[in-house]
Length: 109
Length: 116
Image 1: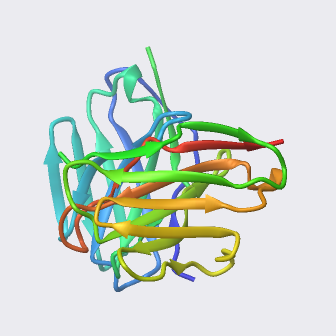
Image 2: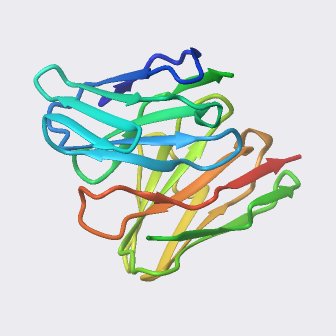
């Protein structure tokens, strides 16, 4: 069973802090990795995609990938209350995206 | 960017009836679309892969005769929940990708189905 694992949280951080979200995956053949944000009652929206080992930065977001450890993370700098949502990690091998259960982030003013 | 439109956004139906959900790629062609289901406080579970001009590929445990998928054109896939039961009440979300197989999926706004 190919799986993507995330800590469901909630992860609570104060406004302005760095939020660190983690994800592991079981399928070593996974080639593409994505972070989505989902607000309650809404569909997921893409935040970041990452395909090679190392860091990828986009604004306040940094995705990190370590294929040897089968580990993906997302850092959110200067967290804002509007960042409060569920963050879904997804991995893809054959084109199908397999999602983790999501981590709920709470950013407190 | 790629836009996926899903309709309806919310539907309430009686037990035993059928419901059709439409998914359209508005500004790109999608030979493949994906249908997901999400129960409250759970993650997205892939139900099936919709293939334009051919039969859908269903994930293990998903009944193909209950969840009928039709992908008649490069911009439209439909999911029909047949003989709906209360346990089918869920959030159904379609998705598609604009580029190659390793590019991200773009999601429709989802359909909240409630079966009474």
